[in-house]
Amino acid sequence: MSGRILVVGAGAIGGVTAAHLTRAGHEVVVLDADPEHVALLNEPGLLFDEFGSCSRVLIRAVESAERLTGRFDYALVTLKSLHLKAALTPLVEGDLVETYVSLGNGLVQDAVEEIVGPGRLVTGIVEWGATNLGPGHLRQTTRAPFVVGEADGSSSRRVSRLAEILADAAPGTRASPQISGQVWSKLLLNSTFSGLGAVGGGLYADVAADPVGREAAFRLWTEGYDVATALGVRLDEIFGIHPSQLVVRSAGDVPAATAALATVMSGAAATKASMLQDLERGALTEVDVINGGVVATARRLGRSAPLNAEIVTLVHAYEQGVGAPGPGAFARLAALGAGRPVSPIPKEHTHG
Ligand SMILES: NC(=O)C1=CN([C@@H]2O[C@H](COP(=O)(O)OP(=O)(O)OC[C@H]3O[C@@H](n4cnc5c(N)ncnc54)[C@H](OP(=O)(O)O)[C@@H]3O)[C@@H](O)[C@H]2O)C=CC1
Ligand SMILES: CC(C)(CO)C(=O)C(=O)O
Image (spheres, rainbow, N blue to C red):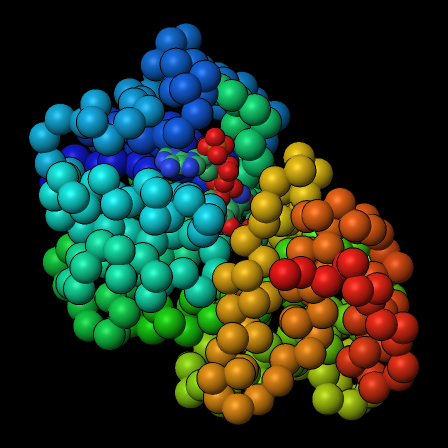
């Protein structure tokens, strides 16, 4: 039943997935660019922290596509958006994979399909979270399923088989006939809470606990929701709520949105956005496909998404070492959303 599985990028998501699938008896190989991480996965094995309980899992790992032998039924693509082209091109050139599964955050699916070719891509999202603690050491922080589906909403054997495999890593995993709705619901979650976590320098819980953070969150969510609706996407449930429940258009909407926020936080409060983790280690972030994905879609539809655009600008400034994340950013975003004046970001804070 299983099929050969290649995990491309064995960091937080890929490494944890590989550990679960290997333990469940699947034939798994990982491809990762970090030679120290690869060596440790092979021997003495991944140090895998599952909610405080640590174990070692031996995982077959290679650091270059040239070291792969045979063909794979699935490649689980668990890379940050910036690395997609470099990692996938050799696999495509070597015709090493039957079906690629895009599992990263943000609006990356079209870019991945362009690299892997038509008919080769299954779309997925990851609702659970994990943290990369350095070479050979990963921690799973939250439990939740994967959701996978064909982009056109059709059902297929490759998707149902994939969902069965991934359920061994994340129970509750399902195939969805509305994967674009899932992608957009996840994008709302990431653009709002990872965006605010990144500019505010805290966990999702810190955004939700701060009254100004909450105001900024409701405004950002509503902006993204309106873009998705204008695009014609049928948004799907995420973290126990329907995305419409976090939309705030007047003061009367706030109590229900606050209750929905508590539901989201019951599963996601401990999340430190990977964009914030990237900023803390001086790396470039995925902001261009997360908040930037909302902005680009809005532009295509002749609309604007000023709060998401502001997050893109702030995060790019921080990437360049200009300014630093802090909760002061919440007030700036809340003011911008309310149409109150904000001081312009100094020229040297803007990207490009
Ligand atoms: N972490 C989380 O909780 C969640 C993350 N996501 C999304 O999943 C995706 C992966 O995130 P995450 O696992 O956190 O990221 P990580 O940075 O932890 O893992 C990515 C891995 O890919 C490796 N890599 C980079 N370039 C290449 C390459 N050319 N070939 C092979 N491997 C390469 C990286 O190595 P190196 O470190 O050397 O660059 C790293 O080990 C992102 O889109 C993220 O937004 C989605 C849901 C939850
Ligand atoms: C919210 C989470 C952890 C997925 O559940 C995520 O997507 C991220 O941190 O990037």
